[in-house]
Length: 326
Image: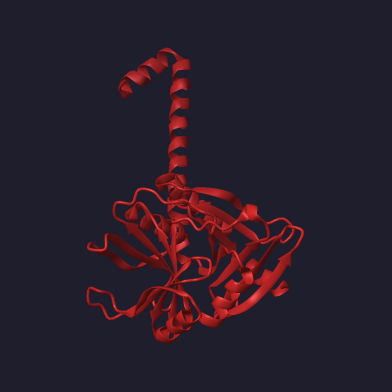
């Protein structure tokens, strides 16, 4: 109906004019709402890129806590930062790392005291990475004590200059040892197996504000693709998430070993809003809405990425306050 026809009908029937007015106002309201949502979408995703973020901790399950601590401290050079026993709940945990939890990325170890909670590694989690200045000595110490070396130290077969090796801890977790100069974060990477590399890169970039620190690397002969994401601009001076796509692999077993990675944020509520937007577009889901944990009051939110890996976002100030209580 054209504009002239609308006016003529309105003069003839006042109720028609009121109906048209209501429809017009409704359309304006919908338009304003959509504009507001679009602005919110853009604002919160832009805020994520400016947020103060740091890898705080990765949590894993282990069989023998004492033996695991011995391996991580005597052979890999970490220190025990805390250790607690919970006899009523039948588990113990410890935190190990290369420096204080206030400034370094650390590993949380949990050991359960019953057969029902026996460790099953699965195949989704790939490995940890540790930067060291003495890769050959570490490998020989591990070998001399009966440890498992799955790749001897040396450069990549295609002619690269980076020296690296792969070893296994007593639980079967794989560690990549990387020969590098001193770095602020010796515990420098976690590697996750993914099914869709481009989608995973987009997910971590948008939802967590990470930078693609190295372009995708296609190892066609070895049948895999790698990508490295993290905060900052130099992957040798920070912790990264290394994503690995293995050609022709269509299924992984989840297991119960790798639990989650924790990342600091200045606002868990804005962070959760960003994640919610990205999950609607790419997949994944929020599994814990933003808010304080009962009793300790630390604000967190948690979500699963497009491959089911869990990330916990923790309020930066609350995290530091909680560490002071320990």
